[in-house]
Image (cartoon, rainbow, N blue to C red):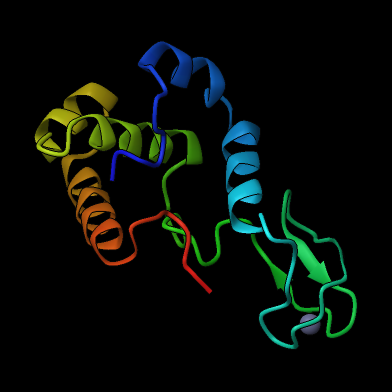
Length: 132
Ligand SMILES: [Zn+2]
């Protein structure tokens, strides 16, 4: 759980992942750390997709977003907010949805849902990426 941002101090975290591009780059590097492999056809060649940081298979044209097959798949919150919430939980797994909601000024139900997803995902996979 706390391995996601291992050794990163809060002030370091906020300067490093304060903008969406940095968050997406973090996902890009983790998700495709062993290189791109198309989910549909297994091809390893890609070009840039339509959305920022997404990759598109040069053979079957399947486009994969940078959040697909990660913890943040279908996450409706801005990625920077989602990252901050993940970081809070990594630092303090006991933190309540109520506290997150107050800290982040995000609706408590939204925080509750994301917190639940993070806890379940991390318990199951031990990483924010899906092992493929
Ligand atoms: Zn393909």
